[in-house]
Length: 255
Image: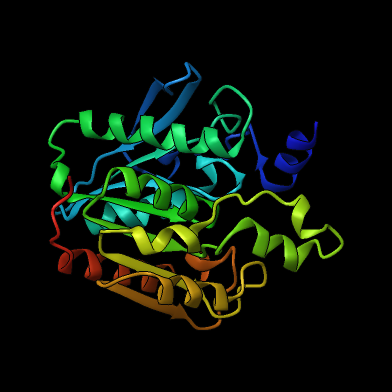
């Protein structure tokens, strides 16, 4: 019961799909696959029609589902990235109930699906995590290093977030979930951290802590005047310019 209560504070899934990629003219394919424990998962494969920069595994944040990130996917594909976007268990059209271990298993399964797509070069696969998704892809990158990792609006740990937003909950009662700051020193892939200067949910200080904890090569870009949920709506052009320019510089092979 305690675990379910804590999961309810971390995960805010939606089953509704207000947007599809086709609504804005994007070509995509629905993909169905399973996590290692048999949980049925759903995602979208979106091939780029531009000159290809690489392939992105996109892990969204803790609210909504992939349909809320259609604008992100449009920017990425226009810039030259093929994208595999997926929903964690309990989100969108994926089965099951969300939990931390499940998100890690789901990301592993999604990575396998991405690598199966036609024309994918394993040496040009990037992981891009938004908010909670940054913790997911950091964990994945330790097991399967990519060509690079992008963290957008990512927190240092759930305990740090709980301390800020749920001060009455004792620290010992909060699980050491998504401990990205503790894991990130072990990352052996180029790292790009992008964060809004006015992020009201995850203060930019947490992005700076992640940056300081990581080893080189690493980059930190703070977007002025941007909050937690409006990175793309306010600064989408700048966001994708930063990601694309960094990807062109990142030539570390994956393994």
